[in-house]
Structure formats: C-alpha cells, structure tokens
Length: 144
Image (cartoon, rainbow, N blue to C red; front, side, top):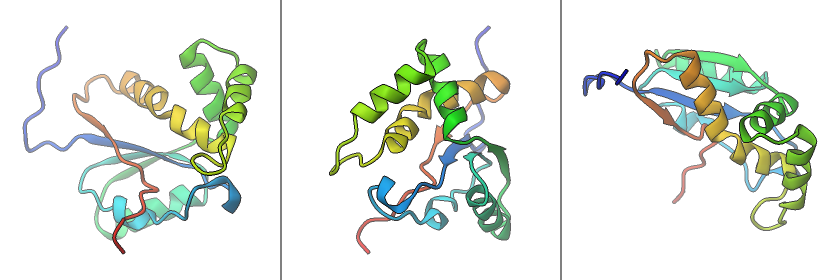
C-alpha cells in the first residue's frame, strides 16, 4: 500500500547514533550541540551518558527526543543480521578496514556501516511515519 506523502510542514523524524569511543578511535572531537538543534523530532540510538546529554540539550531548546540505548556489540549484531553475515565476520571486516588517516578504529567503521540498518529498523518499527532523515549528531561544524 503506497504511503501518503507528508504535508510539507510536517518535519521528518530524524534518526541519529552516538556511541562514545576512546579518543584514538575517532577522527576528531565531536560537538553534538550544533547538529542536535535541528527543529524536528529525533530518535537517537547510542550509549549513556552521551545520549542523555543530547536529549538534555534538545529539551532545553524545547525539542522532542526519543532515546534508545545500543552499544557497539548490539550495533554489530543488528548490522550483521541486516547484512546477512555473522557478527564475527562483520567485526573482522571492520577491523581490516581500519586506516590511520581516514578511519582509525573498527568501531568507527561499524558505526558508519550501521546507518542504513538502523534506519531500516526504525522505519519498520514505525511504518506510519512517512518521512525520515539521518543527521550525524556528532557533526563538527567546519570553518571555525
């Protein structure tokens, strides 16, 4: 059954993921405060206390935020199932994809690979929502 297009004034549900990683496991520091100001309802997956800080920043601005906890192991399992591979095979592939310049950790590779499986999971859980968007909550603004 085709979905009814959302009214132009109805914002999409914004999905994001934030799992805190050790400093050496990320490319650069992240400042979620900028990206979390998008004036749309958010569904944020990730680990505490990071997602709690995101929700608090958004609540202070009067913005709706739903949180769902998932750690790197849960993310690996969800993504592996979505891709039809074993969690061990996915983790091995992620570990083999580490590059000191572009992708310094297997966890970061896994986070990048998980965006579409997370979006598909959210869309299946709420099929009545016609519009979805992904925003990297860890977006660091350029040109500072």
